[in-house]
Amino acid sequence: MKKMKNKKKSRNWQFAGIFLAVLILTATGCNAQNPDSGADSADPEMTESLENPENSGNLENSDQDQDSENETATSDTFQALTIVGQGVFSSGGVVTSAVSGDYDPAQSWKDETRAGNTAHIDHANVFYQIPAENNGNPIVYLHGYRQSRVCWMTTPDGREGFSTLFMRNGHSAFLVDQPRRGAAGAASEISGDTDLDMWYGEIDTEDEDFEKPETATKYQPGDQAWYTYYRIGENLGETNKNSQFPDDETSLDQFLRQATPNTGDYDKVVMAKALGEVMNDVKTMTGNKAIFMGHAQGCSVAWDLSTDNLLAIVAIEPIVVPKAGSSQYQKLLDAKIPIVIYYGDYITNGDTELASTMYWQEILANAEAFAEQYTADGGDCTVIELPSKRINGNSHFMFQEENNKEIADLIEKWLGDHKLN
Image 1 (tube, rainbow, N blue to C red):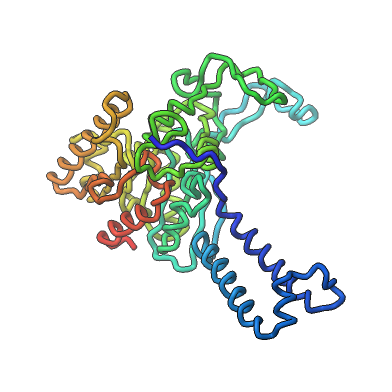
Image 2: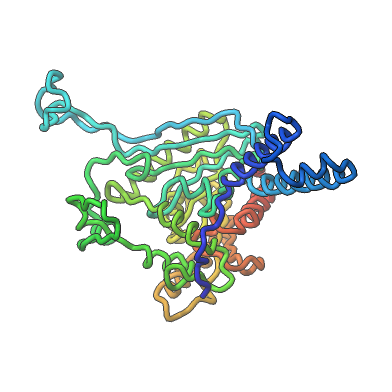
């Protein structure tokens, strides 16, 4: 196990501030040539160069070296990407019947009975971005359990997320918050899932200003449990050997704060219906069918999508796969939908004393059996364990880890092989 570094790693967005600061300091240094700026406070190196012209070349080279370092730091973090369109829209959902009684506009929100009121609920919410160099093969991204679309947009250490990496290859990004999650939180009733989303116990915090809400005894903490389940490490803050997860406390803190609970119970039928509308809306907006990229629980929705607006499925560590001969299976097979499935490290070579290892080994075996049968029946499905490609150290969140670009390139190659880029 590798312990998290006990220092705060510089966030990538800080490079921009550093670069700006250098420009300001450079401008200030140039003002040293102006007597009004105060010679006493001038940079000694600058003063020496002014007094000894033969040293000016050294200073110039020093400035050039500094500029080169700044440009390198900036280019290693973010490069310009032209976006020609972006926005937010909702897809699908229902409108509830009005509460019995007549609506009283005089009382409005003060009428606690909500007589006559309706509600727009159970829709998906989509943030989209269209790059200038658009290849006509949009990607619809769906998060997994406890996550939102944010997981695709960035990394714990502030580098570019999958949606940006694939936009650089020409894929428009349609990032979904599924019904009852994130920006699509409106639901008919509050979640009652006491097994996963809720927990009956006390919340304890060292924050003296923290005011415990009335629902505090119903919240489920799980930093340590999910950390092990995700195969980042056995104990919180101790990453697995050769782990690609950013090994500093700031990144871990950022990652854990991505967790987003359901507002209402998870209903696969509701999710699939809303995501079907998303796929239809993407086709209407772009004129093209879309690639569906899902993570974990989000992959479960892929199997239920209509194939009318579906180009391919990229499944990252799906929890379940269609059963051979099922309606899900046959629909995808008949439409000749190509499927690629990725799993990370620490599964076949994981610690068998951990319940999570045995869990993931069973999931991987099911996916491999599905792919074998789907291909034997004339379909196109490949399961890729990253270690088999000599890509090691990845957890359940491979798309957020330090080598996420390498993995994105691997996926892009598969898309290219299927003429989808």
